[in-house]
Image 1 (cartoon, helix red, strand yellow):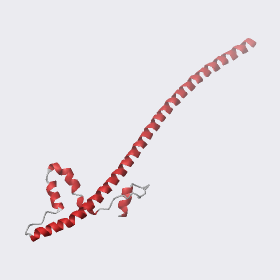
Image 2 (cartoon, helix red, strand yellow; image 1 turned 120 degrees about the vertical axis):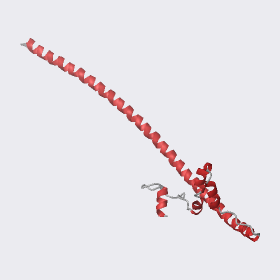
Image 3 (tube, one colour; image 1 turned 60 degrees about the vertical axis):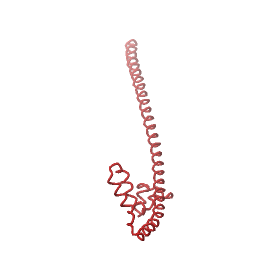
Image 4 (cartoon, helix red, strand yellow; image 1 turned 45 degrees about the vertical axis):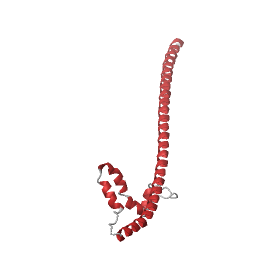
Length: 158
């Protein structure tokens, strides 16, 4: 009777021990999988950090480019404002001498646009007449909008 009871307990003990070993193996596998997932997560976190750094660099580059563009527009306006009265004066002098007026800026740019090598340049210079009268797109104090870029916000208000 006691021997039979001991054999039953021994069989249960053996089954429990096997279940314990099996559960320990599973737990070890779970922890390894968790470590792999954490490594993958950290790799993605690092990737996102790098993306954010790239975004910051691009935002700064865009801001600098906008500032440079605004400076160039201002410079172009000033030069055009200097050019106009001089051109009018030279044309008036030429007329008194019986000579033809000099071609306007837009006529000179049309000649440039006929040359294939100047295609990109003439595209840009073709904008000069617009640029001379354009307002800067973004002023230094223009706040960022959550709904779009500062340029979009500025354009909507014009």
